[in-house]
Image (cartoon, rainbow over all chains, first blue to last red; front, side, top):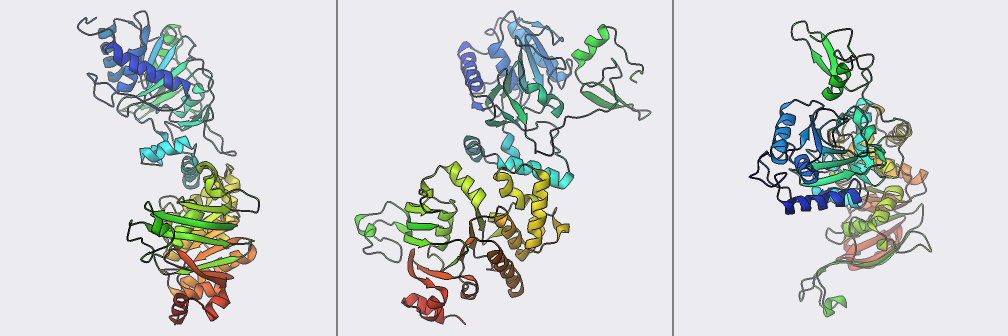
Length: 286
Length: 268
Protein backbone atom coordinates (compact mmCIF):
# COMPACT_ATOMS: atom_id res chain seq x y z
CA UNK A 1 0.00 0.00 0.00
CA UNK A 2 1.31 3.42 -0.99
CA UNK A 3 1.57 5.66 2.07
CA UNK A 4 2.29 8.83 0.11
CA UNK A 5 -1.45 9.25 -0.41
CA UNK A 6 -4.39 9.51 1.95
CA UNK A 7 -6.31 6.26 2.43
CA UNK A 8 -8.29 5.68 -0.79
CA UNK A 9 -6.36 8.35 -2.70
CA UNK A 10 -8.94 11.16 -2.35
CA UNK A 11 -8.58 13.57 0.57
CA UNK A 12 -11.11 13.30 3.38
CA UNK A 13 -13.13 16.37 2.46
CA UNK A 14 -13.52 15.17 -1.14
CA UNK A 15 -14.73 11.80 0.08
CA UNK A 16 -17.19 13.50 2.41
CA UNK A 17 -18.50 15.63 -0.43
CA UNK A 18 -19.02 12.58 -2.64
CA UNK A 19 -20.70 10.67 0.19
CA UNK A 20 -23.03 13.62 0.63
CA UNK A 21 -23.96 13.40 -3.07
CA UNK A 22 -24.50 9.65 -2.65
CA UNK A 23 -26.84 10.22 0.30
CA UNK A 24 -28.77 12.77 -1.75
CA UNK A 25 -29.02 10.28 -4.58
CA UNK A 26 -30.30 7.54 -2.28
CA UNK A 27 -32.88 9.91 -0.82
CA UNK A 28 -34.31 10.59 -4.30
CA UNK A 29 -34.14 7.26 -6.17
CA UNK A 30 -33.16 7.71 -9.80
CA UNK A 31 -32.47 11.44 -9.56
CA UNK A 32 -29.12 12.55 -10.94
CA UNK A 33 -27.21 14.49 -8.32
CA UNK A 34 -24.47 16.75 -9.67
CA UNK A 35 -21.12 16.50 -7.87
CA UNK A 36 -17.63 17.93 -8.22
CA UNK A 37 -15.90 15.16 -10.11
CA UNK A 38 -12.30 14.90 -8.84
CA UNK A 39 -9.13 14.49 -10.83
CA UNK A 40 -7.84 10.94 -10.81
CA UNK A 41 -4.75 9.40 -12.36
CA UNK A 42 -7.13 7.89 -14.95
CA UNK A 43 -8.74 9.70 -17.85
CA UNK A 44 -12.36 10.83 -17.62
CA UNK A 45 -14.60 8.31 -19.29
CA UNK A 46 -12.55 5.34 -18.07
CA UNK A 47 -14.71 4.62 -15.06
CA UNK A 48 -13.79 7.62 -12.92
CA UNK A 49 -17.36 8.03 -11.63
CA UNK A 50 -17.48 4.49 -10.33
CA UNK A 51 -13.95 4.74 -8.94
CA UNK A 52 -14.75 7.90 -7.01
CA UNK A 53 -17.82 6.28 -5.45
CA UNK A 54 -15.83 3.16 -4.56
CA UNK A 55 -12.99 5.19 -3.07
CA UNK A 56 -15.44 7.24 -0.99
CA UNK A 57 -17.32 4.30 0.50
CA UNK A 58 -14.56 1.70 0.85
CA UNK A 59 -13.24 0.73 4.31
CA UNK A 60 -10.02 -1.11 5.19
CA UNK A 61 -11.88 -4.37 5.98
CA UNK A 62 -13.90 -4.40 2.73
CA UNK A 63 -13.36 -6.92 -0.05
CA UNK A 64 -13.57 -5.55 -3.56
CA UNK A 65 -14.48 -7.16 -6.84
CA UNK A 66 -14.06 -5.24 -10.11
CA UNK A 67 -15.75 -6.42 -13.29
CA UNK A 68 -15.46 -5.12 -16.82
CA UNK A 69 -18.30 -6.37 -19.07
CA UNK A 70 -18.53 -9.42 -16.83
CA UNK A 71 -14.83 -10.16 -17.01
CA UNK A 72 -12.55 -10.02 -13.96
CA UNK A 73 -9.31 -9.89 -15.89
CA UNK A 74 -9.77 -7.38 -18.71
CA UNK A 75 -7.59 -4.25 -18.87
CA UNK A 76 -10.06 -1.84 -17.29
CA UNK A 77 -10.84 -4.14 -14.37
CA UNK A 78 -7.19 -5.02 -13.73
CA UNK A 79 -6.02 -1.39 -13.78
CA UNK A 80 -8.78 -0.25 -11.45
CA UNK A 81 -8.07 -3.15 -9.09
CA UNK A 82 -4.35 -2.35 -9.02
CA UNK A 83 -5.01 1.34 -8.40
CA UNK A 84 -7.48 0.80 -5.56
CA UNK A 85 -5.39 -1.93 -3.98
CA UNK A 86 -2.31 0.33 -4.04
CA UNK A 87 -3.99 3.23 -2.27
CA UNK A 88 -6.24 1.31 0.16
CA UNK A 89 -4.72 -2.11 0.71
CA UNK A 90 -8.18 -3.77 0.78
CA UNK A 91 -8.57 -7.39 -0.22
CA UNK A 92 -9.49 -8.27 -3.81
CA UNK A 93 -11.64 -11.13 -4.96
CA UNK A 94 -13.21 -12.46 -8.14
CA UNK A 95 -16.01 -14.17 -6.23
CA UNK A 96 -19.29 -12.24 -6.14
CA UNK A 97 -20.32 -14.10 -2.96
CA UNK A 98 -17.47 -12.86 -0.79
CA UNK A 99 -17.12 -9.33 -2.16
CA UNK A 100 -18.60 -6.55 -0.04
CA UNK A 101 -18.20 -3.86 -2.71
CA UNK A 102 -18.57 -4.74 -6.39
CA UNK A 103 -17.58 -2.18 -8.97
CA UNK A 104 -18.84 -3.08 -12.39
CA UNK A 105 -18.85 -1.83 -15.94
CA UNK A 106 -21.89 -2.82 -18.03
CA UNK A 107 -22.87 -6.04 -16.20
CA UNK A 108 -24.49 -7.15 -12.96
CA UNK A 109 -23.10 -10.43 -11.55
CA UNK A 110 -25.01 -13.59 -12.39
CA UNK A 111 -25.68 -14.69 -8.78
CA UNK A 112 -28.24 -12.63 -6.79
CA UNK A 113 -26.53 -10.02 -4.60
CA UNK A 114 -27.25 -9.58 -0.90
CA UNK A 115 -28.20 -6.63 1.26
CA UNK A 116 -24.73 -6.44 2.85
CA UNK A 117 -23.14 -5.80 -0.53
CA UNK A 118 -22.94 -2.59 -2.55
CA UNK A 119 -22.93 -2.55 -6.34
CA UNK A 120 -21.16 0.41 -7.96
CA UNK A 121 -21.75 0.91 -11.69
CA UNK A 122 -19.65 3.03 -14.02
CA UNK A 123 -21.84 5.18 -16.26
CA UNK A 124 -20.70 6.88 -19.45
CA UNK A 125 -23.93 8.83 -20.05
CA UNK A 126 -26.27 9.27 -17.08
CA UNK A 127 -28.99 11.16 -18.96
CA UNK A 128 -31.58 8.78 -20.46
CA UNK A 129 -33.17 11.68 -22.35
CA UNK A 130 -29.93 12.54 -24.16
CA UNK A 131 -31.10 10.35 -27.01
CA UNK A 132 -34.22 12.41 -27.58
CA UNK A 133 -33.31 15.84 -26.19
CA UNK A 134 -29.87 17.30 -26.74
CA UNK A 135 -30.20 20.22 -24.33
CA UNK A 136 -29.47 19.39 -20.71
CA UNK A 137 -31.49 22.36 -19.48
CA UNK A 138 -34.51 21.08 -21.36
CA UNK A 139 -33.90 17.50 -20.16
CA UNK A 140 -33.83 18.67 -16.53
CA UNK A 141 -37.08 20.54 -17.05
CA UNK A 142 -38.59 17.37 -18.48
CA UNK A 143 -37.45 15.38 -15.42
CA UNK A 144 -38.91 18.04 -13.12
CA UNK A 145 -42.26 17.90 -14.89
CA UNK A 146 -42.12 14.11 -15.28
CA UNK A 147 -42.61 14.71 -18.98
CA UNK A 148 -41.28 11.56 -20.62
CA UNK A 149 -43.45 11.58 -23.74
CA UNK A 150 -40.46 11.98 -26.02
CA UNK A 151 -38.92 8.78 -24.71
CA UNK A 152 -42.16 6.92 -25.24
CA UNK A 153 -42.29 8.33 -28.75
CA UNK A 154 -38.74 7.12 -29.39
CA UNK A 155 -39.72 3.59 -28.34
CA UNK A 156 -42.86 3.77 -30.46
CA UNK A 157 -40.79 4.89 -33.45
CA UNK A 158 -38.65 1.76 -33.00
CA UNK A 159 -41.81 -0.34 -33.11
CA UNK A 160 -42.97 1.46 -36.26
CA UNK A 161 -39.67 1.00 -38.07
CA UNK A 162 -38.48 -2.38 -36.81
CA UNK A 163 -41.50 -3.97 -35.07
CA UNK A 164 -39.40 -4.26 -31.91
CA UNK A 165 -37.65 -1.94 -29.49
CA UNK A 166 -34.02 -2.02 -30.53
CA UNK A 167 -32.37 -0.47 -27.45
CA UNK A 168 -30.00 -3.26 -26.42
CA UNK A 169 -28.04 -1.70 -23.57
CA UNK A 170 -29.10 1.07 -21.21
CA UNK A 171 -32.81 0.38 -21.65
CA UNK A 172 -34.69 3.30 -20.02
CA UNK A 173 -36.33 2.43 -16.70
CA UNK A 174 -38.68 4.23 -14.33
CA UNK A 175 -37.32 4.25 -10.80
CA UNK A 176 -39.87 4.29 -8.00
CA UNK A 177 -42.49 5.46 -10.50
CA UNK A 178 -40.95 8.92 -10.68
CA UNK A 179 -37.62 9.40 -12.46
CA UNK A 180 -36.67 8.04 -15.83
CA UNK A 181 -33.22 6.58 -15.37
CA UNK A 182 -30.48 5.14 -17.51
CA UNK A 183 -29.44 1.90 -15.77
CA UNK A 184 -25.92 2.39 -17.27
CA UNK A 185 -25.26 0.31 -20.38
CA UNK A 186 -26.16 -3.04 -18.79
CA UNK A 187 -27.83 -5.48 -21.20
CA UNK A 188 -31.60 -5.85 -21.00
CA UNK A 189 -30.96 -9.24 -19.41
CA UNK A 190 -29.74 -7.45 -16.26
CA UNK A 191 -32.52 -4.85 -16.02
CA UNK A 192 -35.03 -7.04 -14.07
CA UNK A 193 -32.30 -7.68 -11.47
CA UNK A 194 -32.55 -4.03 -10.42
CA UNK A 195 -36.22 -4.30 -9.54
CA UNK A 196 -36.71 -4.76 -5.78
CA UNK A 197 -33.07 -5.76 -5.48
CA UNK A 198 -31.68 -6.33 -2.00
CA UNK A 199 -28.50 -4.51 -2.88
CA UNK A 200 -27.83 -0.81 -2.92
CA UNK A 201 -26.88 0.17 -6.49
CA UNK A 202 -24.82 3.33 -6.96
CA UNK A 203 -24.18 4.86 -10.37
CA UNK A 204 -21.29 7.23 -10.99
CA UNK A 205 -20.59 9.26 -14.13
CA UNK A 206 -17.21 10.97 -13.69
CA UNK A 207 -17.06 12.83 -16.96
CA UNK A 208 -20.69 13.98 -16.77
CA UNK A 209 -20.29 14.72 -13.03
CA UNK A 210 -23.45 12.97 -11.87
CA UNK A 211 -24.22 10.41 -9.19
CA UNK A 212 -27.50 8.54 -8.88
CA UNK A 213 -28.73 5.54 -6.96
CA UNK A 214 -31.30 2.79 -6.81
CA UNK A 215 -31.78 2.00 -3.11
CA UNK A 216 -32.67 -1.53 -1.96
CA UNK A 217 -36.26 -2.64 -2.47
CA UNK A 218 -37.10 0.06 -5.01
CA UNK A 219 -39.48 -0.50 -7.91
CA UNK A 220 -37.64 -0.41 -11.23
CA UNK A 221 -39.82 -0.80 -14.32
CA UNK A 222 -38.58 -0.93 -17.87
CA UNK A 223 -40.72 1.28 -20.12
CA UNK A 224 -42.98 -0.93 -22.19
CA UNK A 225 -46.24 -0.68 -24.08
CA UNK A 226 -49.32 -2.58 -22.91
CA UNK A 227 -49.32 -5.05 -25.77
CA UNK A 228 -45.55 -5.17 -26.38
CA UNK A 229 -44.08 -6.44 -23.12
CA UNK A 230 -40.46 -5.85 -22.17
CA UNK A 231 -38.34 -8.86 -23.12
CA UNK A 232 -34.79 -9.78 -22.17
CA UNK A 233 -32.24 -11.26 -24.57
CA UNK A 234 -32.77 -14.92 -25.23
CA UNK A 235 -29.99 -17.34 -26.08
CA UNK A 236 -32.24 -20.20 -27.08
CA UNK A 237 -30.71 -23.57 -26.42
CA UNK A 238 -27.15 -22.31 -26.32
CA UNK A 239 -25.04 -22.91 -23.26
CA UNK A 240 -21.60 -21.97 -22.01
CA UNK A 241 -18.92 -24.08 -23.68
CA UNK A 242 -16.78 -24.00 -20.55
CA UNK A 243 -19.10 -24.69 -17.65
CA UNK A 244 -22.26 -25.74 -19.47
CA UNK A 245 -24.42 -23.06 -17.81
CA UNK A 246 -27.77 -22.41 -19.47
CA UNK A 247 -30.10 -19.44 -19.07
CA UNK A 248 -27.27 -17.03 -18.23
CA UNK A 249 -25.98 -14.08 -20.23
CA UNK A 250 -23.65 -15.49 -22.89
CA UNK A 251 -20.95 -13.92 -25.02
CA UNK A 252 -20.74 -15.05 -28.61
CA UNK A 253 -17.37 -15.80 -30.22
CA UNK A 254 -16.14 -17.31 -33.46
CA UNK A 255 -13.41 -19.75 -34.09
CA UNK A 256 -11.07 -17.86 -36.42
CA UNK A 257 -10.15 -20.90 -38.50
CA UNK A 258 -13.37 -22.84 -38.79
CA UNK A 259 -15.78 -19.91 -38.42
CA UNK A 260 -17.69 -21.99 -35.89
CA UNK A 261 -19.78 -20.05 -33.41
CA UNK A 262 -19.56 -20.78 -29.72
CA UNK A 263 -20.85 -19.22 -26.51
CA UNK A 264 -19.44 -18.70 -23.09
CA UNK A 265 -20.53 -17.07 -19.81
CA UNK A 266 -20.14 -13.30 -19.83
CA UNK A 267 -19.65 -13.39 -16.04
CA UNK A 268 -16.22 -15.03 -15.71
CA UNK A 269 -16.31 -15.15 -11.91
CA UNK A 270 -19.54 -17.16 -12.08
CA UNK A 271 -18.12 -19.46 -14.78
CA UNK A 272 -14.92 -20.15 -12.81
CA UNK A 273 -16.97 -20.88 -9.69
CA UNK A 274 -19.08 -23.41 -11.57
CA UNK A 275 -16.04 -25.12 -13.04
CA UNK A 276 -14.37 -25.29 -9.63
CA UNK A 277 -17.49 -27.11 -8.44
CA UNK A 278 -16.96 -29.65 -11.18
CA UNK A 279 -19.42 -28.47 -13.87
CA UNK A 280 -18.20 -29.06 -17.40
CA UNK A 281 -19.71 -28.62 -20.85
CA UNK A 282 -19.92 -31.58 -23.21
CA UNK A 283 -18.25 -29.53 -25.94
CA UNK A 284 -14.97 -27.70 -25.65
CA UNK A 285 -14.26 -24.11 -26.70
CA UNK A 286 -11.68 -23.81 -29.41
CA UNK B 1 -64.26 28.80 -24.65
CA UNK B 2 -63.67 32.46 -24.02
CA UNK B 3 -60.68 34.72 -23.72
CA UNK B 4 -60.79 38.04 -21.87
CA UNK B 5 -58.41 40.95 -21.46
CA UNK B 6 -55.58 39.00 -23.05
CA UNK B 7 -52.48 41.21 -22.93
CA UNK B 8 -48.90 40.49 -23.84
CA UNK B 9 -46.30 43.19 -23.45
CA UNK B 10 -42.56 43.09 -23.81
CA UNK B 11 -41.06 45.69 -21.47
CA UNK B 12 -41.88 47.25 -18.15
CA UNK B 13 -44.67 49.61 -19.25
CA UNK B 14 -45.16 53.14 -17.92
CA UNK B 15 -48.10 55.21 -16.70
CA UNK B 16 -48.68 56.65 -20.20
CA UNK B 17 -48.71 53.51 -22.29
CA UNK B 18 -50.66 51.50 -19.74
CA UNK B 19 -53.51 53.94 -20.38
CA UNK B 20 -52.94 53.84 -24.13
CA UNK B 21 -51.58 57.40 -24.38
CA UNK B 22 -49.00 58.35 -26.98
CA UNK B 23 -48.46 54.92 -28.52
CA UNK B 24 -46.74 54.80 -31.90
CA UNK B 25 -48.40 51.77 -33.48
CA UNK B 26 -47.93 49.31 -30.61
CA UNK B 27 -44.71 50.76 -29.21
CA UNK B 28 -44.45 53.28 -26.40
CA UNK B 29 -41.80 55.90 -27.33
CA UNK B 30 -41.31 56.85 -23.68
CA UNK B 31 -40.40 53.50 -22.13
CA UNK B 32 -39.82 51.37 -25.23
CA UNK B 33 -42.45 48.78 -24.25
CA UNK B 34 -44.01 46.80 -27.06
CA UNK B 35 -47.66 45.85 -26.63
CA UNK B 36 -47.90 42.73 -28.75
CA UNK B 37 -51.46 42.16 -27.65
CA UNK B 38 -53.76 44.46 -25.78
CA UNK B 39 -57.07 43.58 -24.13
CA UNK B 40 -58.00 40.99 -26.73
CA UNK B 41 -61.30 39.28 -26.00
CA UNK B 42 -63.49 36.81 -27.86
CA UNK B 43 -65.61 33.78 -27.22
CA UNK B 44 -66.11 30.70 -29.29
CA UNK B 45 -68.60 27.80 -29.21
CA UNK B 46 -68.22 24.14 -30.16
CA UNK B 47 -68.69 23.69 -33.89
CA UNK B 48 -67.92 27.31 -34.67
CA UNK B 49 -65.09 28.71 -36.75
CA UNK B 50 -63.51 32.02 -35.80
CA UNK B 51 -61.42 33.73 -38.45
CA UNK B 52 -58.60 36.03 -37.40
CA UNK B 53 -57.22 38.48 -39.98
CA UNK B 54 -54.70 41.24 -39.74
CA UNK B 55 -51.41 42.42 -41.19
CA UNK B 56 -48.12 40.91 -40.08
CA UNK B 57 -47.11 42.11 -36.62
CA UNK B 58 -50.70 42.68 -35.59
CA UNK B 59 -50.57 40.04 -32.83
CA UNK B 60 -52.33 37.11 -34.51
CA UNK B 61 -49.62 34.57 -33.81
CA UNK B 62 -48.99 35.87 -30.29
CA UNK B 63 -52.65 35.26 -29.56
CA UNK B 64 -52.43 31.71 -30.91
CA UNK B 65 -49.27 31.03 -28.91
CA UNK B 66 -50.99 32.17 -25.72
CA UNK B 67 -54.03 30.01 -26.37
CA UNK B 68 -51.96 26.87 -26.89
CA UNK B 69 -49.74 27.74 -23.90
CA UNK B 70 -46.55 28.20 -25.93
CA UNK B 71 -46.28 31.65 -24.39
CA UNK B 72 -47.56 32.97 -21.09
CA UNK B 73 -49.40 36.27 -21.30
CA UNK B 74 -48.80 39.32 -19.11
CA UNK B 75 -52.45 39.41 -18.22
CA UNK B 76 -55.64 37.68 -19.21
CA UNK B 77 -58.33 35.15 -18.50
CA UNK B 78 -58.95 32.02 -20.48
CA UNK B 79 -61.97 29.92 -19.63
CA UNK B 80 -62.44 26.71 -21.50
CA UNK B 81 -65.94 25.92 -20.33
CA UNK B 82 -68.36 27.97 -18.28
CA UNK B 83 -67.56 27.81 -14.60
CA UNK B 84 -64.01 26.59 -15.26
CA UNK B 85 -61.08 28.50 -13.78
CA UNK B 86 -58.52 30.62 -15.57
CA UNK B 87 -56.45 28.21 -17.68
CA UNK B 88 -53.54 30.67 -17.77
CA UNK B 89 -53.08 30.13 -14.04
CA UNK B 90 -52.79 26.35 -14.22
CA UNK B 91 -49.44 24.70 -13.60
CA UNK B 92 -47.25 23.99 -16.61
CA UNK B 93 -47.96 20.27 -16.32
CA UNK B 94 -51.73 20.78 -16.34
CA UNK B 95 -51.48 23.18 -19.27
CA UNK B 96 -49.45 20.64 -21.21
CA UNK B 97 -51.83 17.86 -20.36
CA UNK B 98 -54.72 20.01 -21.49
CA UNK B 99 -52.93 20.83 -24.73
CA UNK B 100 -52.11 17.18 -25.40
CA UNK B 101 -55.55 15.88 -24.63
CA UNK B 102 -57.96 18.53 -25.82
CA UNK B 103 -56.22 20.84 -28.25
CA UNK B 104 -54.87 20.52 -31.73
CA UNK B 105 -52.53 22.98 -33.34
CA UNK B 106 -51.44 23.30 -36.93
CA UNK B 107 -48.47 25.58 -37.45
CA UNK B 108 -47.74 27.63 -40.53
CA UNK B 109 -44.27 26.07 -40.59
CA UNK B 110 -44.45 22.25 -40.46
CA UNK B 111 -40.96 22.23 -38.92
CA UNK B 112 -42.55 23.56 -35.71
CA UNK B 113 -45.41 21.12 -35.58
CA UNK B 114 -43.72 17.91 -36.74
CA UNK B 115 -40.66 15.94 -35.75
CA UNK B 116 -38.98 15.62 -39.09
CA UNK B 117 -36.79 12.66 -38.05
CA UNK B 118 -39.68 10.54 -36.82
CA UNK B 119 -42.02 8.56 -39.05
CA UNK B 120 -45.45 9.89 -39.98
CA UNK B 121 -47.03 7.28 -37.71
CA UNK B 122 -45.06 8.43 -34.68
CA UNK B 123 -45.79 12.06 -35.43
CA UNK B 124 -49.52 11.47 -35.59
CA UNK B 125 -49.46 9.23 -32.51
CA UNK B 126 -47.48 11.74 -30.44
CA UNK B 127 -50.45 13.40 -28.72
CA UNK B 128 -52.16 10.05 -28.23
CA UNK B 129 -49.09 8.67 -26.47
CA UNK B 130 -48.83 11.86 -24.43
CA UNK B 131 -52.41 11.47 -23.27
CA UNK B 132 -51.52 8.07 -21.89
CA UNK B 133 -52.49 5.65 -24.64
CA UNK B 134 -49.80 2.97 -24.38
CA UNK B 135 -51.41 0.31 -26.54
CA UNK B 136 -49.51 -0.14 -29.81
CA UNK B 137 -52.21 -1.89 -31.82
CA UNK B 138 -54.73 0.75 -30.79
CA UNK B 139 -52.28 3.51 -31.77
CA UNK B 140 -51.63 1.93 -35.16
CA UNK B 141 -55.33 1.51 -35.87
CA UNK B 142 -56.06 5.12 -34.98
CA UNK B 143 -53.21 6.41 -37.17
CA UNK B 144 -54.47 4.40 -40.14
CA UNK B 145 -57.93 5.87 -39.60
CA UNK B 146 -56.54 9.41 -39.45
CA UNK B 147 -54.42 8.98 -42.56
CA UNK B 148 -57.55 8.02 -44.42
CA UNK B 149 -59.30 11.20 -43.25
CA UNK B 150 -56.48 13.42 -44.51
CA UNK B 151 -56.08 11.33 -47.68
CA UNK B 152 -52.53 10.09 -47.27
CA UNK B 153 -51.74 6.63 -48.58
CA UNK B 154 -51.09 4.07 -45.81
CA UNK B 155 -48.05 2.92 -47.81
CA UNK B 156 -46.23 6.02 -46.64
CA UNK B 157 -46.84 5.46 -42.93
CA UNK B 158 -43.25 4.60 -42.13
CA UNK B 159 -41.73 7.50 -44.05
CA UNK B 160 -40.42 10.63 -42.43
CA UNK B 161 -42.34 13.85 -43.09
CA UNK B 162 -39.16 15.59 -44.23
CA UNK B 163 -39.50 13.65 -47.49
CA UNK B 164 -43.07 14.86 -47.99
CA UNK B 165 -44.32 17.81 -50.02
CA UNK B 166 -45.50 20.95 -48.23
CA UNK B 167 -49.17 20.15 -48.70
CA UNK B 168 -48.73 16.62 -47.39
CA UNK B 169 -46.79 17.90 -44.39
CA UNK B 170 -49.71 20.19 -43.61
CA UNK B 171 -52.12 17.28 -43.87
CA UNK B 172 -49.93 15.21 -41.53
CA UNK B 173 -50.06 18.12 -39.10
CA UNK B 174 -53.84 18.21 -39.37
CA UNK B 175 -54.06 14.46 -38.74
CA UNK B 176 -51.85 14.92 -35.67
CA UNK B 177 -53.97 17.83 -34.45
CA UNK B 178 -57.28 15.94 -34.64
CA UNK B 179 -55.92 12.61 -33.32
CA UNK B 180 -57.41 13.15 -29.86
CA UNK B 181 -60.77 14.50 -31.06
CA UNK B 182 -59.86 17.90 -29.60
CA UNK B 183 -62.30 20.52 -28.37
CA UNK B 184 -60.23 23.33 -29.80
CA UNK B 185 -58.40 23.31 -33.09
CA UNK B 186 -55.94 26.10 -33.87
CA UNK B 187 -55.00 26.63 -37.50
CA UNK B 188 -52.21 29.12 -38.07
CA UNK B 189 -51.87 30.11 -41.74
CA UNK B 190 -52.31 26.52 -42.89
CA UNK B 191 -52.52 27.32 -46.58
CA UNK B 192 -49.91 30.05 -46.84
CA UNK B 193 -47.12 29.14 -49.22
CA UNK B 194 -48.99 26.29 -50.88
CA UNK B 195 -49.99 26.42 -54.54
CA UNK B 196 -53.66 26.74 -55.38
CA UNK B 197 -54.49 23.10 -56.12
CA UNK B 198 -52.76 21.91 -52.94
CA UNK B 199 -54.47 24.70 -51.00
CA UNK B 200 -57.80 23.42 -52.25
CA UNK B 201 -56.98 19.92 -51.04
CA UNK B 202 -55.92 21.10 -47.58
CA UNK B 203 -59.03 23.28 -47.32
CA UNK B 204 -61.22 20.34 -48.33
CA UNK B 205 -59.74 18.30 -45.50
CA UNK B 206 -60.33 21.11 -43.03
CA UNK B 207 -63.91 21.57 -44.20
CA UNK B 208 -64.54 17.87 -43.84
CA UNK B 209 -63.19 17.91 -40.29
CA UNK B 210 -65.26 20.94 -39.29
CA UNK B 211 -68.37 19.23 -40.64
CA UNK B 212 -67.73 15.87 -39.02
CA UNK B 213 -66.32 16.75 -35.63
CA UNK B 214 -67.97 19.22 -33.34
CA UNK B 215 -64.85 21.28 -32.80
CA UNK B 216 -64.19 24.95 -32.06
CA UNK B 217 -61.75 26.28 -34.64
CA UNK B 218 -59.61 29.39 -34.61
CA UNK B 219 -58.35 30.09 -38.09
CA UNK B 220 -55.60 32.63 -38.58
CA UNK B 221 -54.98 33.71 -42.13
CA UNK B 222 -54.21 36.74 -44.20
CA UNK B 223 -55.93 35.15 -47.15
CA UNK B 224 -59.41 36.67 -47.06
CA UNK B 225 -60.73 34.08 -49.50
CA UNK B 226 -59.92 31.31 -47.02
CA UNK B 227 -61.59 33.23 -44.21
CA UNK B 228 -64.67 33.86 -46.35
CA UNK B 229 -64.94 30.20 -47.18
CA UNK B 230 -64.48 28.72 -43.70
CA UNK B 231 -65.12 31.23 -40.92
CA UNK B 232 -68.52 31.85 -39.29
CA UNK B 233 -67.31 34.91 -37.46
CA UNK B 234 -64.26 37.08 -37.99
CA UNK B 235 -62.14 39.41 -35.89
CA UNK B 236 -59.77 41.92 -37.44
CA UNK B 237 -56.57 42.78 -35.64
CA UNK B 238 -54.31 45.81 -35.95
CA UNK B 239 -51.31 46.70 -33.78
CA UNK B 240 -52.17 44.20 -31.08
CA UNK B 241 -55.81 45.15 -30.75
CA UNK B 242 -59.04 43.69 -32.08
CA UNK B 243 -60.49 46.57 -34.07
CA UNK B 244 -63.49 44.94 -35.64
CA UNK B 245 -65.57 41.83 -35.07
CA UNK B 246 -68.75 40.31 -36.40
CA UNK B 247 -70.19 37.71 -38.74
CA UNK B 248 -67.79 37.06 -41.60
CA UNK B 249 -70.22 38.26 -44.24
CA UNK B 250 -70.96 41.40 -42.27
CA UNK B 251 -67.26 42.23 -41.85
CA UNK B 252 -66.55 41.54 -45.51
CA UNK B 253 -69.59 43.33 -46.97
CA UNK B 254 -69.87 46.27 -44.61
CA UNK B 255 -66.54 47.03 -42.95
CA UNK B 256 -66.64 49.83 -40.39
CA UNK B 257 -63.04 50.47 -39.43
CA UNK B 258 -60.86 52.27 -42.02
CA UNK B 259 -58.24 49.52 -41.87
CA UNK B 260 -60.82 46.82 -42.54
CA UNK B 261 -62.23 48.85 -45.41
CA UNK B 262 -58.78 49.10 -46.92
CA UNK B 263 -58.20 45.38 -46.39
CA UNK B 264 -61.46 44.32 -48.00
CA UNK B 265 -60.96 46.67 -50.95
CA UNK B 266 -57.51 45.32 -51.59
CA UNK B 267 -59.08 41.93 -52.21
CA UNK B 268 -58.67 41.15 -55.89
